[in-house]
Length: 590
Image (cartoon, rainbow, N blue to C red; front, side):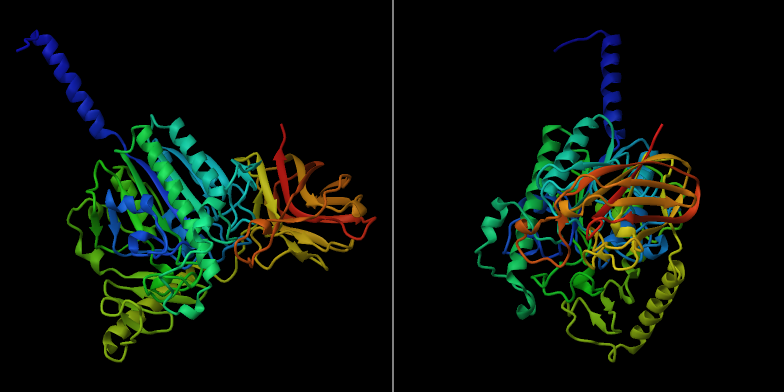
């Protein structure tokens, strides 16, 4: 037996106890993966034999899965509810584009909470809750942002993206690219606790995915169908499934990076989706898909792997929702949420850790609402957007309306849903009076896209879905593109325009004005307006296509603080058209 001097033995014991204490006190890392338009049924974990998602499935095998977890019917509301722990109507989110996706500035985000408690924070992917600072992710608690802020993007292969406001060109397929950037951030911050938000933008259309994933599905026989098989578009389903397998591969790369860095044990990885599937495909026989407040439109997987604390193979019977994540993750990290507006979500960390759960969590109502469609979910029942009552234990497909058999329950739930809907309507208000904030001193660069503008005269938007659209058919000096804007802090700004213009139309004189300031410049370099993106589509899209945009510095303008109309017009048009317009950039100088 080895005998040590007493003082050395004590020193070793102190060091061991200190290391144990520091390991015990180490804050967990968090990675939150949110996919776009992937339904509950788009995982092999849930019985879908049409695809294989082993890496995503492993999160449930090695951690916990929720039996029932709920989000919103569409994208931006779910993101808002995840970020704030509050129903999206309270945060001013009423649309998926043109300003209606913005999250009110008095809201505290989950990134604000973790940043204030010593975490490094980064977001990589589709933001969809505001573009101009301080609505921008860099203004909502994320130190690092790489991706795009709109609701959808027009091309997934090396497209125009942004890095902390700077316009950059993406590197390869976007989901692969976002994962690469997230891994780089994790590697750079592995010595400190980090909070990574990874909002992937697939399988949202356009339906594009690398050939190595598509080749498996191009001629595959699908054995699992939508409950109404005649509604399914098989080509669309195949593309969506291929995109889901690409997501799975990227989740696998992310998990492998955690193992390589030896930080997997104390890193909590969460995985969920923002709404139901974006097409009629197999979804466990549930009613509804994206856009619906029925079960299939708002039920999402929720998988949580944290080897240090969560028992492998756990199944959480307590219903959870996106609104629960800010109090739950703060509790898991043993940090204070701090002062926020009243939360709608609950701390459900006990359910994840296998501890007793308060009875009120089992019995609470969870509400869903979007564009006048509302529903209510209890532990057993759903009151649908049409006023029908379904017992989802006995009838998970919402086939049998039982309101006549349970009139008292129907009245009780109807009253609760009506009261909630009225409260949300009052919170949202009748009109969005928020201007687009430009030139905020917190960010050197302001993006002002066509998406947020209003065209006059014969100028047309390239597609009815504004997110990645541009303006075309600009033929008259009496026409303009306008933004209701507010300059947050005055100063001098360099102005860039993103445009295309055929050689025969080059030479138009452009004027940008705001209040008493004006800047004039001439388009001197042509860029042929050719559509891009269609060559990568696996299924016809409804959204518009992209172009290879030219960048031109228009000049510098002095803007004073205040509200007004930012206006872009042409004063001379030597050809048939001015240009196709995509984006303005304002860069504060000095």
